Amino acid sequence: MKMFDSHVHSLFSGDSEMDLNIACNTSIEKGLAGIAFTDHLDIDYPNFDVNFLIDFEKYSNMMDELKSQFFSRLQVLKGIEVGIQPHVTEKTDEVIKKYDFDFVIASIHVIGGIDPYYGEYFKGNPDKKTAFSRYLSEILYSVENFDNFDVIGHIGYIRRYCNYDDKSLKYDDYCDVLDSILKGVIKKGKGIEVNTSGYRTLGTPIPDLDIIKRYRELGGEIITTGSDAHAPEHIAYNFSTIKKALSDIGFNYIAHFENRKPLFEKIT
Image 1 (tube, rainbow, N blue to C red):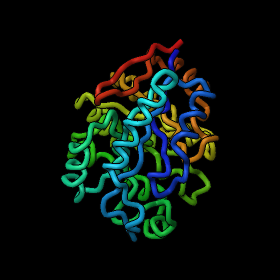
Image 2: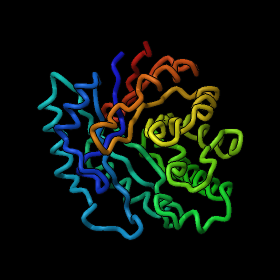
Image 3: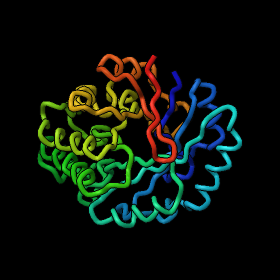
């Protein structure tokens, strides 16, 4: 089957230095049919460095050049990963509408003005249940109050950075809010991504397989695969593993997006 890595960051993101041509050539070497660059838009990110702002005019033009340059060898898709906070939805929507993106990931990186990447978030929450529940509530808010996205990104992002001995985010522990998130996604005709970055440090994808299974049970069909790569060696990370896992759960297709429309590749 044709596999697409639908979550890759380049030097346009403040947290990545990956060269665009190297990313494309690495994708070809790894047998991918396509790659979606999904560099960051996080409006009002805490302690924001203006140097992290993307010149989206330049970004869009560069993506168009790459599409032409690699046309016969790799499908290059123009994506964006937007960080949602309640007060930035309108400004975020304006940026998305201004450019011809193929794909939009909506993610939660900031909770109450703090990114869990920095340890202060966990110091301010008395226990894991509270910390994780606040995070999931922010995802639910984004699903209910923001429409201009295609998939919800890495449900379980918070697991990467927590300091708990047990870093799991299991469906049974947060079933009510997770059901609300997943049902909301399905009702809007949107999807979720399975992010394989979790395999690098947590031993499982993000979200974990039990949440993905529940999404399927509820009728979810749109699911994308993304490595969240910030370096070439992580592109398509553990894709063979996740392909089998999705098939075992009951998915027959994996999606990627072109012109904001899902296209489905049959799992073989």
